[in-house]
Image 1 (cartoon, rainbow, N blue to C red):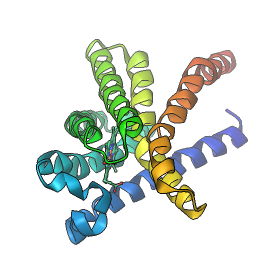
Image 2: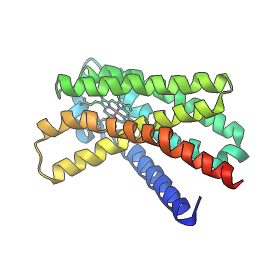
Image 3: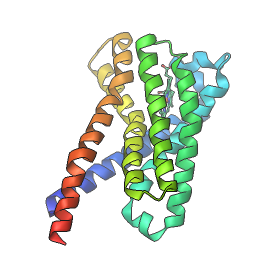
Length: 213
Ligand code: HEM
């Protein structure tokens, strides 16, 4: 890797890690302020669906906060046990908050288009993570990494959703129109970018690395 591409990769990683940490912390605001005051558009879940709501908003931030640590090469090499334990917590957090997120999707007030976007995201989130677990149990580490990267691209939807929501509000777009679109936009481009990286960029980087070794 050249100096420039190493700098670009490190900048991308730290932008991802810091934004994930900020959104994870901000998502726990309901602990101090309560759901009705801090997240009024999901507060309708409090009557009849409160457990699922708390399972999602209380546990999904853990998956988001843990995700960047799993891609720190030095941490993986020097503290493999810690990597494995954080990985188990990441997977458990996705299983619990993904199932709850799937249930919340069917209770969104934003209509069936938004519900389908969120529901598909929840299913793919659990599926990609589950496949990554199967591969690590089979000691197929390269495949485990690829599927964890796919899982991470979907976890990052929590960040992209809030970035697009903030931008659409700043641009004065109608929330009722923007929100259902964002329910898809928050994850489909993430998944496509990751797939392009896995299919084209990563193999090329490995080829160059082995050619210069
Ligand atoms: C990637 C899979 C995810 C799915 C499918 C999903 C699904 C949902 C759904 C359906 C809602 C309710 C929206 C509505 O009623 O209109 C919601 C709200 C919420 N989700 Fe997720 N979510 C995911 C990931 C995350 C992650 C990783 C976080 C961590 C920060 C998170 C934090 C929240 C919070 C805090 C809310 C309450 C509303 C808000 O403050 O934006 N979600 N999610």
